[in-house]
Amino acid sequence: MRDPDSIKAALRDSHIVLSGLGAADGDPPGTLTAGAHAVTAAHPQRIIWLGAIGTGSSAQAGGLLVRSMFRAMRAKRDDKVTADATVLRSGGTVFHAGPLTNGRSAPPAAP
Image (cartoon, rainbow, N blue to C red; front, side):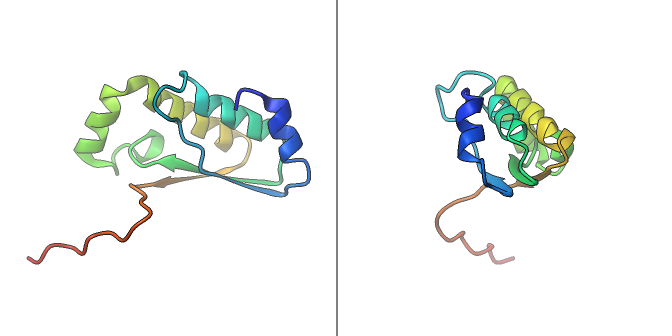
């Protein structure tokens, strides 16, 4: 993500970019923001950026637990918010999702 020229080359003939970029443990601060800058600098026609519920404009929707978690991880939260803002300023769409898994979610508990 910190090599915008590589991103630009990879996106050369792309009209739409769907990004699920996430920061892994140990990634340096600003990884998501660097990725957002790299993608927007490539000037695709459309950017759809997966954000995280509980950050930025969805802070209230995340609930108390999510807000508390992001308060404890301030640098990651700030990186997510800045990356989202970068994409929005370029005319892209930011979708804030809740937890995503690769399996089925448990059915709701009976009342």
